[in-house]
Image 1: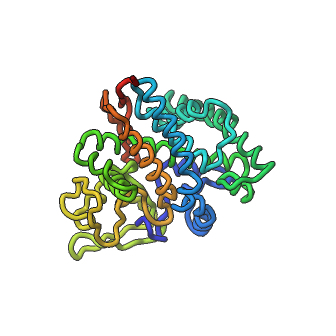
Image 2 (image 1 turned 90 degrees about the horizontal axis):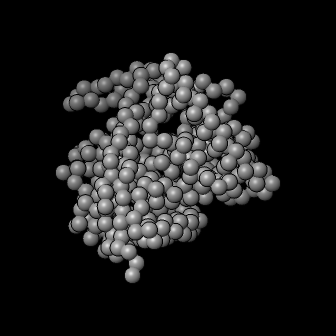
Image 3 (image 1 turned 120 degrees about the horizontal axis):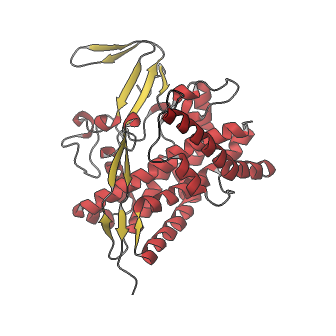
Length: 359
C-alpha cells in the first residue's frame, strides 16, 4: 500500500491542507505523484549517509556534549529537555534555520505542546486551538524563518531553504516546509531517543551489548528498538483506483477508489512472517525475511519514506553512546507515557536523569 501508485497520502492533517488555495504549493509531506517524486529526487542529497556523516556529525557531537555538560554540572536534568535541544539544533542545520533570534526552543515548544484542542469552529477549544496556532505560526516565522530566508536571498547556502528559494517558493511556502520538517525531524527524534534510553536503562544485558559494540553494532540495537517501538505507529493512505490485495488464504481483498486504508506499523513490525520468532523481543541483528529492513516499517516506505532516517539514527547513537559513558548515570524518575491516537505515537515526558556530583 505504501509503495502503490494507486494510493496517495492521507491523515496527518492533509484534509486541512487540501483547503489551501491552489496557488500555494503544499509541503512535500502532502504531495504525491510526479511533483513529489521530483522534489524528493532534488533534495535527497541533503540526507545521504555520507552527507549526514560529513556535514552534521560535528553539530551532533557539539550539541550532545553541551547538553551532557549541563547534566553533569547540575547533577540532574529532564531527558526530554536534553534531547529536544539536540533534535532542534540538528534539524535547523539540515533545514537552514541558522539565523534565528534567541528563543527558538520556546517557540517550537509552543507550536508542539503536549496537548491540543480539536481544530475547527465548532467549539471553544477549536477556536482557541486555531487562534493559538496562528499566533505560533507568526512567532516561528518572524523569529526563525524570515531571518533565514533573508540571509539566503542575499547569499545562497547548501541547505534546504536555499533550495526552496531557487525553486521559487514564497516565504509562506517555505514556512510550511520548515514546520513539516520540524515536526518530522525534531519531535519524532526526541521521542525515539527517550524510548531507546528507557530500554537501555531497563535491560542491563542490552546496555552491556550496546556499550561494547562498534558504531554499526550500536545502530543495529537502535534499529531493533525502533522496530519494536515505532514513533509513528499508524500511517494512512487513500486509494485513487481499485486495488486487489491478498487476504487470508486464497481470499482477495478489494479496496475501492476513495477508501482510506489504515496501515498499523506497530503491528506489522511484529509480524513473525517477516521478522521471525518472538517478534516483541529486542534481538539486534535478527534475520529479517522478504527483504524487510532492520527497523521494519518504522521509517515508512515508498515515495513518502522518511528521508531523515540516517540523521535520526546517527544523532540518537551519538547522544546515547556518550550519555551511557557518564559514570554514575541513573534514571531518577521513569517517564510518563502519553499517546497520540491519530498516528499511534507515544509521548515520553518527565524522565529525570541523575549523575554523581563532580568531586
